[in-house]
Length: 88
Image 1 (cartoon, rainbow, N blue to C red):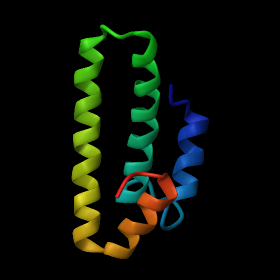
Image 2: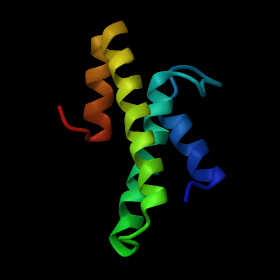
Image 3: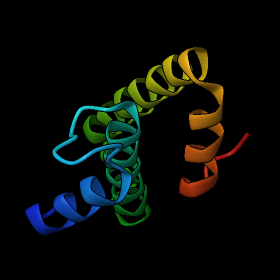
């Protein structure tokens, strides 16, 4: 689960400026952390279909944010996916 300390660390690492919590980089990083957590959760809770629906929503939201970032600033997009270790 995402603790406040973990969230603060992620925000500090991916923020584009001080106090930045809403940039696409920060949002994608937080979503990636939650997606990773849920993926591990499903390894032991195979039949948790309700949470699986939530996972699909998170993945979709992350994809939309990444598409937006790619459209607005391709270099920031490529830097982010490399830093997060995402495909593409």
